[in-house]
Structures are given as C-alpha cells and as structure tokens.
Amino acid sequence: MQPRDLSDHVAYEAGRGIEEVARELGRDPSEFVKLASNENPHGPSPAATVAIREHASSMSSYPKAAHTDLVAAIADRWNVEDEQVWLANGGDGAIDYLHRATLEPDDAVLVPTPGFAYYGMSSRFHHGEVDEYSIDRTDEFEQTADTVLEAYDGERVIWLTSPHNPSGSTMALTEIEALAAETDEETLVVVDEAYGEFAETESAVTLIQGQDGFDARDDVAVLRTFSKVYGLAGVRLGYAVVPEEWASAYTRVNTPFAAGELACRAGLAAMGDTEHVERTVETARTSREAMREGIDAHVWPSEGNFVLVDVDDAAAVAGELQERGVIVRDCTSFGLPGCIRITCGTDEETERAIEATNAVLADLEVDAEAEVPDR
Ligand SMILES: *Cc1c(COP(=O)(O)O)cnc(C)c1O
Image (cartoon, rainbow, N blue to C red; front, side):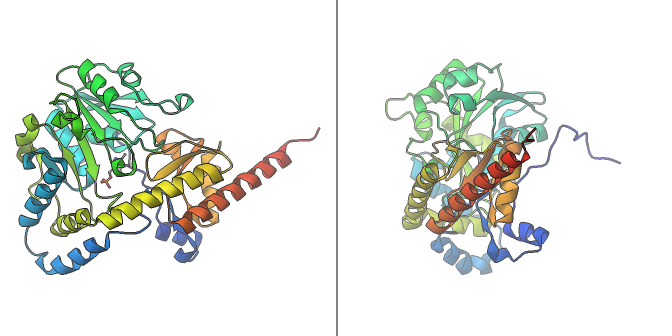
C-alpha cells in the first residue's frame, strides 16, 4: 500500500539550525550565530517564559479557557468580534484553515514567486491547484494590484505577503483594496502580515473593518503569527482575521483544539509585553539599516526583520558564511539563486554578519579573478 500521489508535493526547506550545522561540520554550536529563519534575536518575551512556567502543571487539561482568553485579547487588539479571529497552530496552521474553508477540489490559489513555499504546499494538501504571479527583482520587488492582476485568472484565493518574504517590500492598502475590488466576488485576498509589526504600513485589518475611509470588505483576510516579533516560533501560534461573514466557518474547519495550552498562555503574556515588542522592532530597524549601509553588495530596502542581499552566487556565499559561523538563508529555494536573506540580529550579531559577508564577498572575488586563464 502507498500514500496518495504526492509527486507534486515538495518538502518545506526550513532555515538551518545551529545544532544541525555544528554537528555536520563537527564544530561547537557556540561558534555560530543563526540569522536564517527570521527569529527574534532577543528570544521570547520574558513574560511568556514566566507564563509557561506558571501554567506547566495545567498541561494535562485540554486548552479551553486559555484559547478563549487569547482570542478575546486578539479580537480586542484589532477591534473585531471574537469569531473573526481564527487561532491556529502557527501562521502555517491558519493558512491550512483558510484553504479548508475555501477550496473545493481543483480550485486554484494564486501565490507570489519568489515567495513563501507553504501557501502552495497547503493548497495541494487540500486538493487545490497553484498558480503564480511574479514579484520582479528588476522592479525592486514592487507590489501593486497590477502585478497580481496580470496573472489573475479567477483563482479562489490570492496570497499577498506584506512585508514580503524574502524581499521586504510592502503593498499599499489602496493597492490591496483595488485588487480585491477588481477580482471576482468569490476570490479571497489574504494578506500575510507575518512581519507586520516591523513595518510602518497600516494593517489590512483596516479593510476588513472598513475604517480610515475604506469600505468594509468581505473578501479580505489577514494572517498574523507569534513566531516573529513575539519570539514564540517554538510554541507554534498564529491566527487569521476574517470578515464577519466568514466567522462561523471556523468551528467547521478547525482541529478540535487549534492551539496548545502553553502556547495560548505564552501568547497572551507576550501580547501584554509591549516593552519586548518595542525593543524587538527597534533592533530590527537598526539592524536592517546597518546592513544596508555596511554590506558591500546591493541590499534591498526592507520593512521586515531581515534583508535580501544580491551576492550573485547564493550557494557559495551562504556556504562560506556558514564555515565562518554565520548561518544565513540561501534564497535558491525561493527562486532567487543570486540572493541570500540575513535576519536582523542583535547589534553584535549584525556587526558580525556585515563583516563576515564583506570578507566572503572579497575572498570570492579574489578567487574569481585568480581563475581567469591568463592566455
Ligand atoms: C514565518 C512566516 C509565516 C508563519 O510562520 P509560523 O511560524 O507558522 O507562524 C507565515 N508567512 C511568512 C511569509 C513567514 O515568513
């Protein structure tokens, strides 16, 4: 017996971990810094750590009150009804819920390329098709309604990423609104704001609520995660904010307990820790500016907690950086074989990343020159 035909499915390639790399190279983990997965360099909110310790003994119960309390806090934060908050096991879990709620077999989703791999993977799990629109490096990864409409062909769901991973570009709310207005009534536009806290731009929740001069829309949803700014990637917690009209679908598509007890407790505590959030955002802004100024290669402007760097040969540069103890993301798997993505670290980590990158780029250039045959 075999599983179903999974030949269209590909494994998710996560950023590499320190333990994994150190073991492979036979080195001490303490020699490495990991700037490959856009994690929080300050770690989790200390309040979240306390909450997990305090609630450790309630692990034996199914999460009911914790789930209710966290949903209420998120709804309050966005000024929406509790039912409009679809809590999930990570942002990835929320992607699955949105597909469960929308896709009939052979419906298609429209996803960005380069872009986050899980949108397409999740669609395929739900027997959906995957079409792509291009976010073009020759246009500075600019995102407008037109860049998406050029490829749009009646897909059921359109995935936008703002700030975009891996480029860091954003899409203006007026463009998102124009896109939602131009597309079919049955097309849901999802704005993935995994990095929303790091950007100056306003959340697309504004379009769902109909505030700030926008009419309320029933065809826009927003995705958020606790993995990035709150530093809770390890607990797996995220959510979607959906239009009022969609609210009741959640109870029909979610897993019986969408997020764990300790995850919910940690999330609730982290939301209240504004000091940790502000410090994290400040660090990311300082770091990305330092990398833009300091790295001797083109670094695109970014509104996320990472920057994309044009290095020509991403595999060579990422490999050499790893040898020197700095783990970054080779963007070949995103469809950008010339680029690496470096996560914003602490001041010291950022400094180390800039110096190591410049040293590697200089060395590779010397090597390249040496290889030119002098006939
Ligand atoms: C990190 C990330 C997510 C969500 O990650 P989770 O850890 O599953 O919450 C979603 N979209 C993008 C673009 C991301 O980079």
